[in-house]
Image (tube, rainbow, N blue to C red; front, side):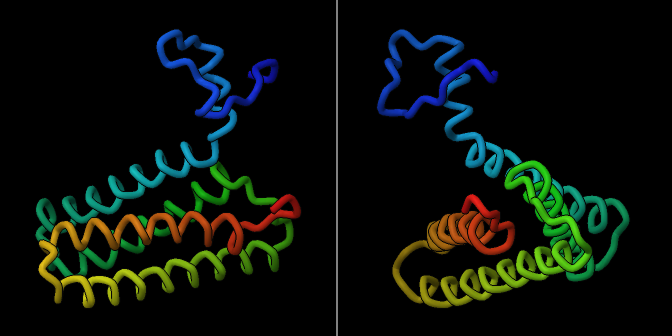
Length: 156
């Protein structure tokens, strides 16, 4: 893919799209695409672990949910660090700092998600729509927190 140029969406002729165009779009939006893919996989980890622990092993739903969330966040950290934002941390101190920043960012957006729910659930907006709105805001915030705070590189 190294000989393919980056392409912006506005420059695409969608009626005559070619493989090189798709490769160029991927190169230009790779970070966002990978963030979405691993975000979906993080959700699968969360739901899958919860299902196994709660439904198959008959663990308490709160314990199962806690473990599912913990494993999902750890999965998100590892994939974001290595596959999405390509962390440049080398020393133990740098790696620990990144991890703590990532966890602090997730804790911050968890508070935002909770407070957003408290506010929106008081409106006439249906609960699932409210939850979806808050979730979209949280996903966007998590992207920017990861990119510019937790896994900040010299390029950023």
